[in-house]
Length: 626
Image 1: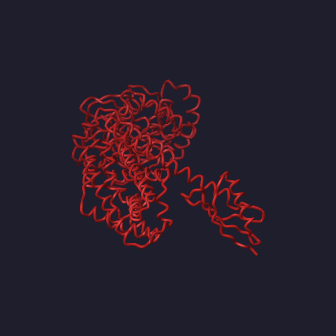
Image 2 (image 1 turned 135 degrees about the vertical axis):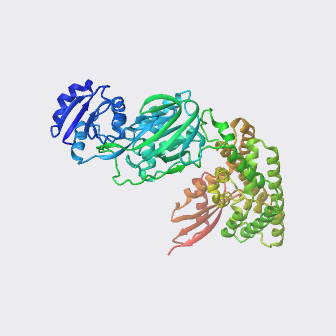
Image 3 (image 1 turned 45 degrees about the vertical axis):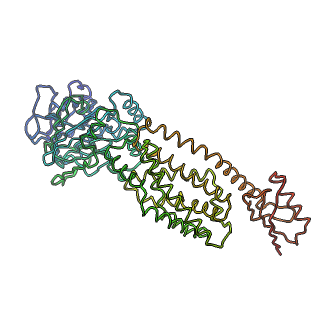
């Protein structure tokens, strides 16, 4: 760029004379102040531009196709073009970039309704969170944008758009807004989502933002702050069209921003003018000198479509939490309705899983019991009951309760029958573990209910239902309570039944809350069912709390006595025997000499004193260390 035209803003005459012209001493400069009368320049000119965005917008239409080469200096009013062409904020660095580039590259130009776009077009009024410059991103600016977005009366309201491209049928959808950029470096969103995009590849990128909830939008933004560019992928609520020409129509005039200039129109036509002129790119812009033929992209499968669904969301503020579409609800409700019905396969699996669980309990075999948990189908009607409770669907609730009831009846009969046939009558570890539930079991049930409801609502994670079944263990407590009936041991029956009811109530409540948060029912409709479920869980929590306190007390005793020394005797392997009155503790005493009756009495007194218990019975194993 030896024979060069310096085209500058007359209002910046002082800076041009004092700084720019001396710095450009290596060039044979013709210095020309810009005026509106200067609409074009000679074909093939080399031009260094020191203008504002507005002035550049007036100049560019006159030089498109004229084989001119443009270089840019960071004018205070050139914010959008500086971002679009990767120009350094430092005047000295920008001049170094111009001097170091041996030749310009062919650059495309994005036109919006015939006007040049140097950075981005933002359609809609609520996209500042997603469209900011990466170079100026910070937590402070994020929260400022967030406050501004949520404060506006029209913020986050989906609008109807009809999008027309050259080789696809028209797309009618609803979105909170649309962002159009020429290449990936223009905005925070485009820079995070795609990297193989250049200013000379003949295509633009149109991003259609249609989040299902405000939380979903913010979650993606916050997540993008902490993830590297290489780990980003297009979220489900964003459509992506890569093309050369696109038209966006709306029924009423919509506000849009063209390089931060506010406008309004019912139709917005975006067009890429290929190889419009030559540019000297700045250091912050990646270019592909071998871009080749542009490739098309049309990723719109997950955008809102369908007249019924669009009527539900258009013109209404975006909900804070995700709300399921009518089609999603229909699909899930059909599955849950089928799950709530009694079937021969359900009853058969209930009997088989109970028999398997009972045999596993008698044999004290965890693998067999786990197999019974996976085989058991009881989770399905309980999740259906959660939806029925949430939406007050009487038929769904009745069918679910009926199915659960038939399953319980057959399970009890199977467990009692097998117990009567089996001569074993011993409380082993697997049986004992299920007759004293506590608040931890309620926590397991609640988390399992959340997982079960989420897995039913999301087909892609339905394969995790086996893991949910193992975690919540519905059938083993049924089998233990049936064993209790067969033995005539009512303490065993009631303890195991309490565990089953804990699982049932916890799953129903957690499943209902999860479905509500996933948007399958408004809170007003769900309020009654949630209140009743919460009352039942609260009632069950009282005995569970007592059981939890007992468990904590037992572990505190074991911790306090383990390795405790009474003279030359060391206490080890401490176990509190559940349910014994007075308290029964099994201990191992390790001593160097034989232990006498007086020694045992002294140990007992020391234990009672250490755990602050008036009366304790001991089961003692003595070990002599020589």
